[in-house]
Image (tube, rainbow, N blue to C red):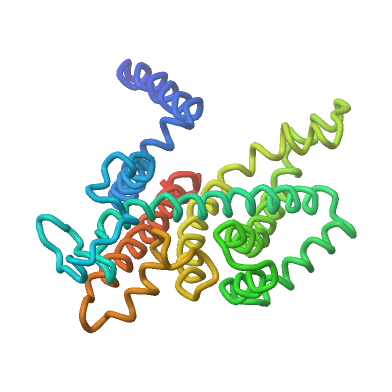
Length: 301
């Protein structure tokens, strides 16, 4: 009869304890997997810095972003004006700081609104099925038939320009993606054993959806929410660039890019810095979303 060494007998409970500890601490497992994504960590730091700047912009702006200085028009980048000045002599760096507030407000508001509506519709479609599922999915198919920016332009053209209407337009084309993700997650979670047990115990449909099924779909919604913010920033900047969003006199990244293109030959720094901050912000949110997806996916070790 084979004997098991004491070292192995002692090691087995330790391994079991570690395995159970990992299973019982999903937060630690998530942090461990996320910390391996260096680009995601760097992107998260950039996003936190951008949010901090958006809140503190009125206190850290070196110049008034709306105050013209006609004696200092089209000044190149210098120690006094880090990003130069525009056609009215306004400090470009101060306008970029002020524009971070509007860009983040539009993107967060529109994606939050789209995620809320899309999650509710997708949860109802996935849980009840039938005509509700067909109605929601066919509506999403119709919206998916239009390019996002073209659909946003059509909506803003109907309801009028302005940042508030841009929020509505971006939210509308964000709804279908959240609805489809929520529906597919609901279809898989509602077949789980704990849902069947809760249903057999007499839980109502509302309780099953919001207390048992919805928490199991949050991970996929969070990932899509993060990545849609970058898309919303790009869409809002594009609408402002085309004249459907913020006014050219407002401190907005898209509006700055729109006015700067007229002076690309004489003052290219206006376009470079406004376009660069849009590029970096969208890239940061996309990389952060990729890191969250990898960390939240149980199949990826």
